[in-house]
Amino acid sequence: MYHYLVLFISLIISSNLVAQTISERLLECKKHLLANHLTSGKVQGKNALACYQEVLKKDRSNVKALNGIKQIQERYITWIENALKQGNKSKAKKYLASLRLVNPTAPANLGRFNIWLESPIRNKTQFRIPRLICNKPNQVFRDRLLYDELGPEMVCIPAGEFKIGDNQGKGNSDEQPVHDISVKAFAMARHEITFEQYDLFVKSTAAKKPNDEGWGRENRPVIWVSWHSATAYAEWLSQQTGRHYRLPTEAEWEYAARAGKQKIYGYGDKIGKNRSNCANSGSNWSNNLTAPVGSFAYNAFGLYDMVGNVWEWTCSAYQSRYRGSEIICVDTDNYSGRVLRGGSWFLDKRLCRVAARNWSYMNSSYNNVGFRVVVEP
Image (cartoon, one colour):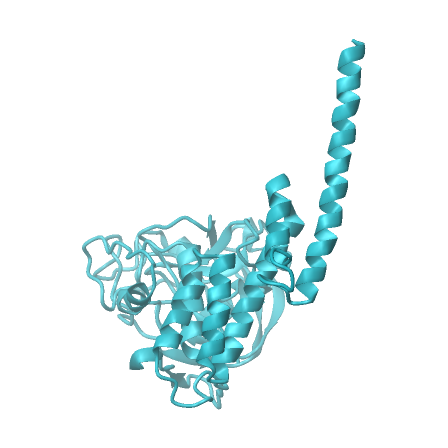
């Protein structure tokens, strides 16, 4: 018994010493980080990356060490972007080499920098973020991508207020409470992102090419894309254009779908015939497959297919009742399910209401789920 007690006490002392050593090491790591000694320093092996890696050898899930490495990566990304904006390719290449030491398997970041470094820089303003000017509602524009391709058609959405949720009392409990929300001006993709647009992203990155179910690609909405894939596409657009593309918040999506009207389906209180692609909406595609984007009339904001066709990913985390998450974007560190909006080609009209909510896990994909993007001013 005495032997086991001594062993137990020894283990406790050893554990405390390890914790104390890690704590002291983390303080040293932070000093390197603050001094911008990220992957190199005055003394070999004395830098933030090596320091945090040493901590992780002793504690593989140490949150501070993992966050420290993430900060190193983000700092190099910022430095690369700034160097490119200044037209300094040699400095950008130097930072890119250091970034590879931190995370050699980050295709979304490394791929875009390789494109920029291979492209001729005509002048120092090439990488400046263009200002988004929306002079009037329904104004349409397209950003030019690298290699002279064009991004998706974007529509300017005016600022305003609306009541989010089940205004008519026809929905589910997760559409409550109905409440007022103010929305700032933004621009939204006129159509759901198509296979043609998504395939450009696939071609220039290491992204997986999604299945089209044999329905055709080109101007049909892309399907079999997870939240991660949709977010990666938006980040790629940002990298290509200098603007901040992202998925819409849940509030932005419903505001855009309603387009100033408090109607069940945006365009009216009845699903109608051949006005959208839902299971019982009387279109050529209903309950069979996706429709080519733009097959039905646009709404008052100039947006197509906000009712049916495919569910659309948002950047908001799902909550069973509205408690504020509908107005914010969450990042990949938040593992909550993500909100889907809009209904789809094989779902009943009740789920195609503009107030209807759905959700799924970030890594899930389906043949009735796609997305569209927004741009902040």
